[in-house]
Length: 153
Image (cartoon, rainbow, N blue to C red; front, top):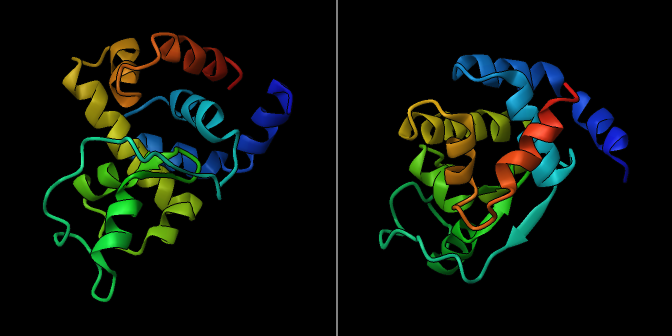
């Protein structure tokens, strides 16, 4: 998929992106850039990351009744939806639902924007540093990639 095709796909969610971004005092283009980089606008994108280390020991808090501990653990080690938000991070930001709900664009963008704002806040509002935190610092080029996408919006 070309950059233009990915940007067009993300534009389908522009009203939701603007709403989520503005609710969290973010630039909508920055949130759209994250969506382009993470999922290319695919709301059903999922990726299990078995080596993800930052799992809370408390697998009960935030877990819906009836969800097994094993499913909770794997849900927390999975990145979900448009923003590819890690399940653990979603729980930390207050998500208490069943994992597939994180593939709903409005919900994913709301929690993704909340987490991105948290990352930026921890870095004094610096977008480059905040994006590094979002990505866990593993890919040094990540902020530049997102900002390159953001320029399309």
